[in-house]
Amino acid sequence: MKSAVEVKILGQKFKISSDSDEVHVRKLADYVNGKLEELKGVAKNAPPQNLLILGALNIADEYFRFRDEKNSQIDKVTQKVKRLIEIIDDGR
Image (cartoon, rainbow, N blue to C red):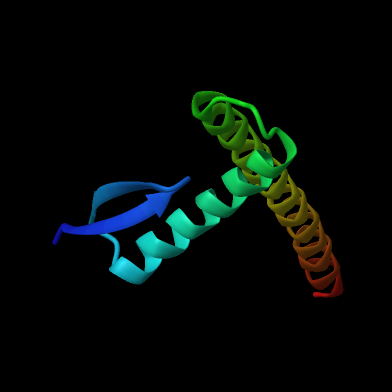
């Protein structure tokens, strides 16, 4: 069931409609706001649109790095499992 949650990002209020619970939506908004505030501290005179684009790129970069690391770990575990299966099959 969708619910509306009001959040604040870069001092501006937004009403977010989501199937997720309010706590989750607020965590997401707080995370995004924190990233944008960090950028705002570094690029003090940047227009809000530039901060939003930079923030989106930074968050996308974090996501891709995390995803790639997770996929690498899955590949390593898959290879180990295959080797263990081979060892077990050879022992029969």
